[in-house]
Amino acid sequence: MAESILFAIESGIGSITLNRPDKLNAFNREMALALQAVLKECESETVRCVYITGAGKAFSAGQDLSEVTDPDGPGMARILSEHYNPIVMAIRHLKKPVVAAVNGVAAGAGANLALGCDIVVATRSASFIQAFSKIGLIPDSGGTFYLPRLIGHQKASALMLLGDKVPAEEAERLGMIYKYFEDDSFQKEARQIATTLAAMPTIALAYTKKALQWSFTHTLIEQLANEDKLQQRAAKTIDFKEGVQAFLEKRQPDFKGR
Ligand code: T3D
Image 1 (cartoon, helix red, strand yellow):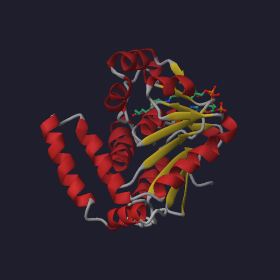
Image 2 (cartoon, helix red, strand yellow):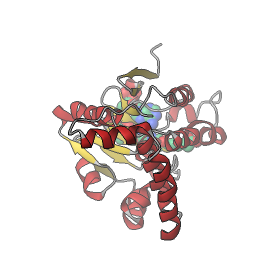
Image 3 (cartoon, helix red, strand yellow):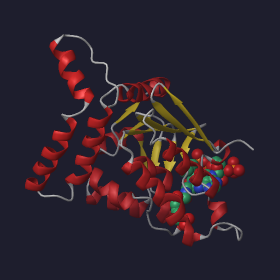
Image 4 (cartoon, protein in one colour):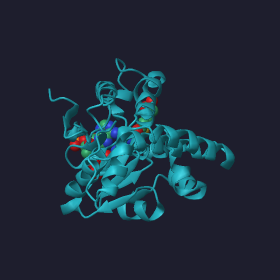
């Protein structure tokens, strides 16, 4: 049986491919646990950017609905706490940027795992569906946290209640994703973002990620103090020294992620 998650580290990029294409990369327990395991591997210093995409025509159709009804399956009580929630938290806590390259439909948990990534790009023919209400569930996998923060309460509310399909172009217009690319250039463009990030000062990017996460739960005065604290640390990195030196010497910096 093919592995449900493909993983490779190349040129500082931890590339993860959701790999159950005949099921539109729907998650079963094995795939969710495998994704957790490779996200753990991405904590390695050799990984400076994580890139998540799907095999075949979909990003992910969310929970494998045949597993939900399987008497030998994990059961509803364990699916969120053991499958999706650890993935959402792993992406949030990784000290490097995580790029979701949404290559096709992203539905249910598949959509919300993507929205929890630091940069989300999509191919023009991709779409995002909060499919939960259509089957009598509520949005999960961090969707009720991320979507209203990305696009505002009203739009998030309507999309989650109605379960409408949002094409990539509309997702970009709403601010749900960073950008969409034409289908024929999508892979190259999405990969280029990861390549760029993997060559950047990784520690400063990690602190940027942290500061942004704190933004919604802190006052301005607290956030100024947070920025101050993180900036002091960034200024102590080898990459800061290299960045300034390269600027003064009018050359490209060679960041090491340290
Ligand atoms: O405890 C808990 O379970 C809570 C956790 C919840 C997390 C969730 O993610 S809940 C939401 C689950 N996902 C969905 O409800 C989406 C279901 N899928 C769809 O609505 C559609 O498949 C899509 C809109 C995503 C794509 O439509 P389309 O027309 O491009 O493809 P299709 O023909 O519907 O699907 C192709 C195949 O994939 C098909 O199999 P077949 O007939 O060729 O053998 C279909 O059954 C299978 N598939 C698609 N989605 C799932 C799936 N199989 C299992 N689970 C799926 N989610």
